[in-house]
Length: 127
Image (cartoon, rainbow, N blue to C red):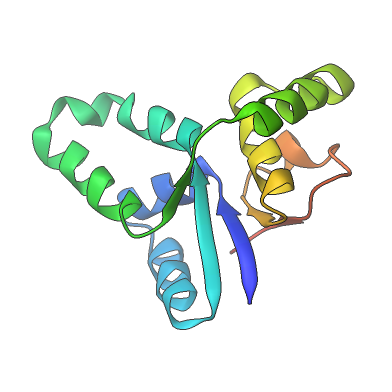
């Protein structure tokens, strides 16, 4: 069983209809995975310009409902602060990385440069 935290970019790829992302999500659903996303990912997705349309917001909510949202608790907040201080990580990326760390999960992202310095997490590129 794999614990996975999906970065925002993976959801964006799916929402944009990228074939590789569609196949990856199909594989995730077939395998024995526990899949999480950070509450910050929800903020990033909902704040997108496309969410002016009710249908797009509903699509995002539907996709996210299939996975477990992890709120930012004290452990995640402290670790995100550590990542920002130690590695200069952007706020949202630090929270997402801290979520993976606290959940003892692999972080799934194509944004390698955002996370490569953070030694405490395992980063996996999905496609």
